[in-house]
Structures are given as structure tokens and as C-alpha cells.
Image 1 (cartoon, rainbow, N blue to C red):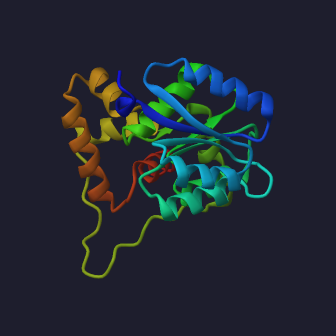
Image 2: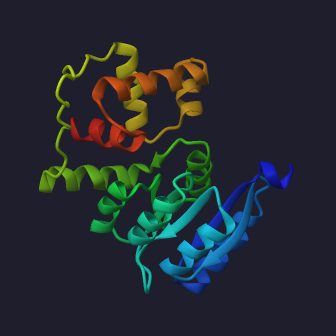
Length: 221
């Protein structure tokens, strides 16, 4: 695999042992190239602008600049970059702030290696992932404080169109944090067909991203 085909990854983590362990572990993957590491949010922003990574594995709580602020700063200047957040906290409000900041994935640091790799690869291919544990926490918090509000239709825009049964099935898989390839395999569809279904669902519900779609589905259970 050539360097151009690899996922260019930056790891932003203030704890030296964890940062080095993640770097060593992920560098073993043939399709991942760890191009830089950062010990705080400011370094993460600098690394993003210097190395133009595809994905940044971003700690939430770091000195000088936290992960949410760093995510906003990075995406403002490099919107093509994907950020996967990490947190050690079961009910950390920063996770919810990260949603609006534009993060493409949400994991607890206790996640299995396979979950971390799936989140990185999913983000790189434009398929944000919500791990089951983070998804349940987001749902619980949104229900508790009722911060999720159904987007209002703009003037002249019709109400949401009803989803077909097939689209509802696809939506359930998205809410479970599955990527297009996994959904296609489980539903016996072509990956391109799943992608088209997701685009149609977003348009019907007047949502902007797959992350918003997952949260919407979870909030209505």
C-alpha cells in the first residue's frame, strides 16, 4: 500500500503513556500512517495545519486548548479533516459540545482496538461512528436536558416526508453506529444503495449530517 493510499492520522492526547501507546499500536496498521502526535489542543491545531491529516484522534480534556475548541479551530481552516473524539468520562458534557463542533466519531478510551480502528477508518471514508456506549450516553443526556430540538423547516419548505420501510431499516442501523459497508452486508444491499438511502433520509428529515441523523433516531426511541 502506497503512502498516498494510507489514512494520515494525528493523535492528540495529553497523557504521554497513552499517546505513545496509541501511536505505536495504530502505526502497525498497514492502512494507517501516524504523521504526528500532539500533547495539547494548540499542538493539535498546528499539526492539522502542517500535516493535513485525514483523521485526528482527539482527546477531549487537554491543557491550553481542549478537544472541542481544537476541533472547531481545525474544521474552520481545514473542513476536510475528520475528528474522532476520545473521552474517559461517562457523562462528559464536552461530548455533546463536540457534536456541534463537527466531530465525526465518539469513543470512550476503554473502547476495544477494533472499535478505535473502525472509527478511524469510518471517519476517513466519510462514515461517522457512534460507539454503542457513547450513543446511549448521548441519548440519556438529550432526554434529560431536552436539548435536541427538531429542526424547523425553512419558509417555503414542506414538512418532513415519511420514510419508507427500507429507509427506516437503514436509519435503525445508522443509529446503531454502523457504517455503509456493514449495513449493506446485513441488509443484502449494494453499498452504493445504502449510501443513496442515507442521502435520501437526510433530505427528507432536513438534517445536515449522519451524526445528526443518528442522534435524531436515538432521541425518538
